[in-house]
Image (tube, rainbow, N blue to C red; front, top):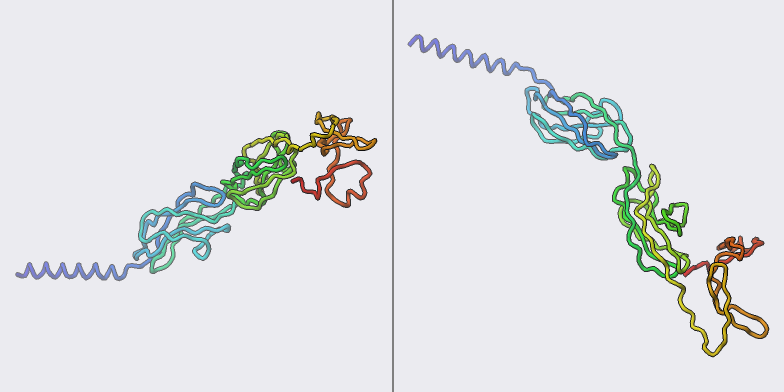
Length: 298
């Protein structure tokens, strides 16, 4: 009986000792490590952390924080990724291209905040955009419809987009072009002031701070000019220009007139006839030139 009483007393004292020790145990902030950063782009990255020790209290929040200055805290950019100890993954977004960032994992318990080791990384630089040129439609003797689709902005804003065209391959912005807004996505462009019976090459373009990117090249040929109906009761002559265009002529009195509009854009010596569209230029020009009626090639 005395042995049992002694054993019970010892057990009771042991329990009391354990409870006293537990109550005297000092709580601390969590112990955290930061994962290395991976999958870095111009605007996103992936990191995370591991809560190795809860500090003696429940982990109520955890995540990562980042900033362009050292020792980031949850007062700045941060994620929240669950509770408890163990590993977690965090997705970082809203970054700026070609910029150094500092990252730390964090965890919170009732005693306070614990931060992991600091890791730095640099986001990718802005590159040329990725885009395609849409199929050309609605071709007339002087106009056509084209456009493009920008699938990737290169990590920076698209500040200009459109299509460019020329009678030579691989046209650039230095050739004729449209300007059709900003940003990614699809857009439609109207190509104007074309020459009839001519082959044109077209490419969509998109410009960001890295430069101008071009889509695939499309080509099309404008039809010949709309046929003119001549009076079958009249007798017409003909004349041919340097480019091989043949015109009907008509004699009125002692003068011979062309019965069709001039199509050529070159003089007999092969030099180009200037195209003037500005009224002020017309007033001061001392050479021959041509223009569309009302400056509208349609």
